[in-house]
Image (cartoon, rainbow, N blue to C red; front, side, top):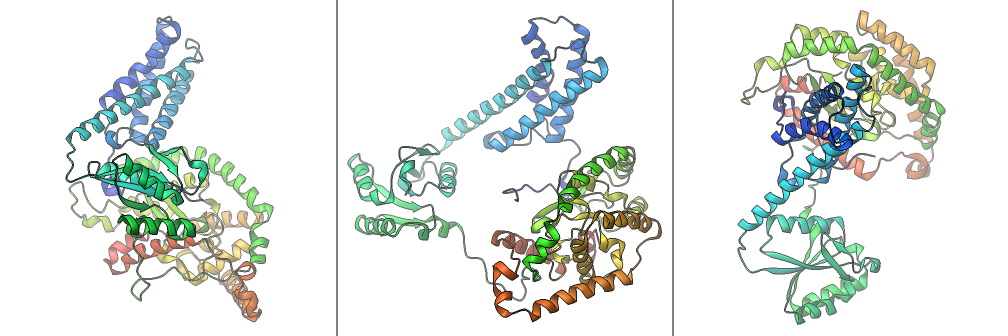
Length: 542
């Protein structure tokens, strides 16, 4: 499942080495470990151990504050999401302080409860200051608000997330112009509860009595806002709403129709989602329901962690070379299509300078890698950060290579049913020397025939490829294309009823995922009209 509203990382040209850190964060990062000792013992009983722990904790807090950018959120708009990120940062600080002190002193002079107390004090102090700052900014803004016209009283139909969003929008944009009086919802169990502080007082069929009750209290309902699709309302509720609005001359507004415009129809100049290949359900079950894929994930995690630890000196050396060659940031990210067509952030060491400098001036040398960059690309050392993709579960060590949406071959539904890989059958059978159709056929062949023996063979061929370069394996390419042609022929010969029945013959992606994929392809299609050098930069991986 894809995360809702996943935040993209900043482009390389807009990434700073050091982020802003609030003065209070620095002060409390140094005071909180000392306060933990005082809270537990009432005094400093072991000066040496206390100084060691406090020093390690302070250095850890400075590093983690930079890493998590804890001071970046604007206090006026501080959210629960920002609070969770801050709590994660505090957990990491306490853990690093405990580990560092254990390495230096074995924690012989520090009670075991100190890291827990340190975390609680650090988190409460940082979160408490942010809550106070948000309350201060909110009150300051409210005092400066002046209504621009008479207040309109609004009644909302539907206790939905859209209703919550609409109420927050009115509070932010027009607090003196509109006032939400109440909410009506068809679920009777929600009666006498509230949404964003606004009471839910009945159902839409009670609209006549609700309007009359408020009128008796001197509140005239000026507008009714439906925070749901009209077809989701019962016929009786929709009829009552229209009747009351017509009888009392109350404005009626359907919020989804107001906020979401129709998407333009597909045209020749707007590319659609790449055509999905027809894949039989039995074939998918045969290929993907084997125990091999579960074992593969366990092996990916174990081998990925082991390789990352063993290659950590090499990773540090490459990191240093990249920083000296192209500067910060050292890591480049690019969004590609991962498993089930979901967005995947692919990480690499940067081999090009940023497109723009700090003054947003375009750099001519950004289009060509330096000697260090060419070496990293040739040896594939620039792909070492993808070990993190493997450890986090977004990728596998071996599988179809993740591609940009614009580079996806025709009929790619099968290759997107598994985790993409750092290397794969298509890479060792041709790499940059094969066409997209051949690459797709080789990837599908791997999915159908994947095994531990095949993966071991791919690893050995990958090592050979690093030494001799790309080489076309005509025999493997012909076998993959032949197998794909035979499958297409068998589907063509199948009865029409079977090929048109979604549950028996076609693997169809979820509508929302298809929509996201289409938007990604439309976004990537803008590269077609760009400068060729810019396109080359976007396609960093074959």
